[in-house]
Image (cartoon, rainbow, N blue to C red; front, side, top):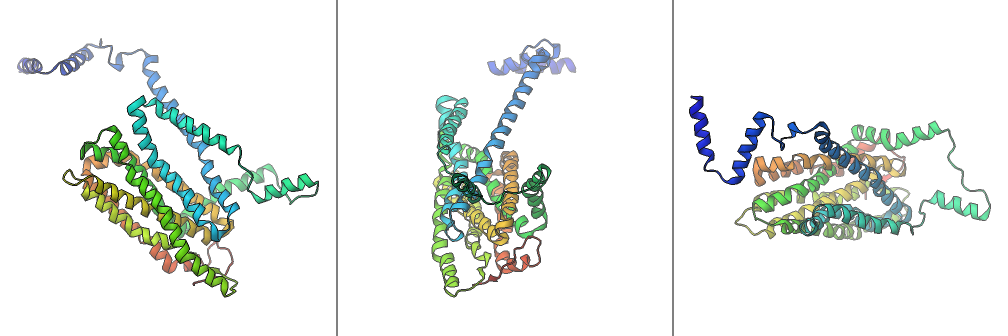
Length: 412
């Protein structure tokens, strides 16, 4: 019986092509332990080198993220130093647009670089751009008010503002509380921070998910080549560019008139933070609708431009939800605790952005484009009620909270 099976296999392999024959021959060598192409037969150092190389690459990418991430926090703080709260929407919208835009422009540029010069040139391209941008930072001026006052006092040889006093251990404890302990505590104890961080983290994770899913979708359904797969990110990029326009319009025609009306009444209170949620309430229905549209418009019989339009609407909704939610948390927790609230938001946002690509391709292969994206649409619909809930009860949630600043809130 065994001999007949063996002869059948040998007869079958007489009809395979040369590539399959070479694979069969390699498998035969594996049984005898003499195949030089089998990693199990390599010397120890040769087997250890690929593992060490992967570990080194992972470590280098970790260093790139570690040393590149502070710029995101510093930029938002710089905007807060330069512009007063009522004038921050335009610079904040432009600033928040850029990281999202970079997330989708990168694969577009990378597709053309890889097709022309190879994958290694993706790293050279990033290095050249980083060199140019970091050179520009050399000409930036200080914007932090206490530091500016210290410099002026030093130039005039007069006493400056008092510096923070304390031991090294106290300074370490202060920074660990501000950067790690307090954001984590707010994330799990403050409903506003926890729920909105989950919502904005989910939207940012979807952007990272599309970075891996887009090439698969447009390759399998529309048979795009490498460069065309890169161009498929133009829909997301268009949504990034439209987002700030919508946010500025909301601020100019809805939020600012309410603020001016409040100031004209000489009120000593402040406008309720819930008025920052207009953009989020507008973007929340756009997210599930655009995801469902992308899910069922991604078919060979339907023109590829329609899924791209759906992705543009998705990115528009994502950006308006994110910026509005961030401004809402800043106004809610005030100057003292806003940085910790935004830090908690950033922590969860980037964790989800790192996790989503790990399962995106498997999900799309297993469920298909339609149902995989529909699952995401159902999740977006469930999370989309958050801005509407906080619009109704957000002010009451703050009462008695540990992170509330004492200030009279006026519901204009």
